[in-house]
Length: 108
Image 1: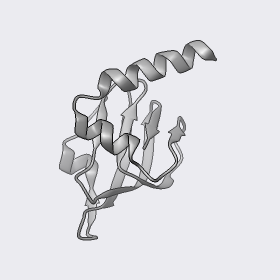
Image 2: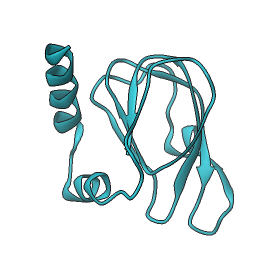
Image 3: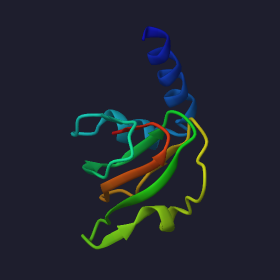
Image 4: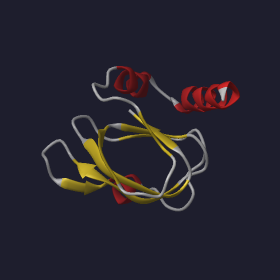
């Protein structure tokens, strides 16, 4: 168990590419959420970290103006997303629904 946590933390920190992502993760008022199943989850997060190679079925939410957004299409996520990838929605936006085809993610 400890070895898995260490590997996941390493992947998370390797995926953080700038201070903005780190601030959004650390300053998030939502509880981090681990998802490793193929159910649809209603969430309220800003950052997704792929803990292993992941494929999304649904990744939608609201932009800063409250308009429904398909983050998967807008960000250009297609096929398998590599482990360690950090996906951050624009400032003021939220991820509201996530459904995985495969993989494991942590949301902040």
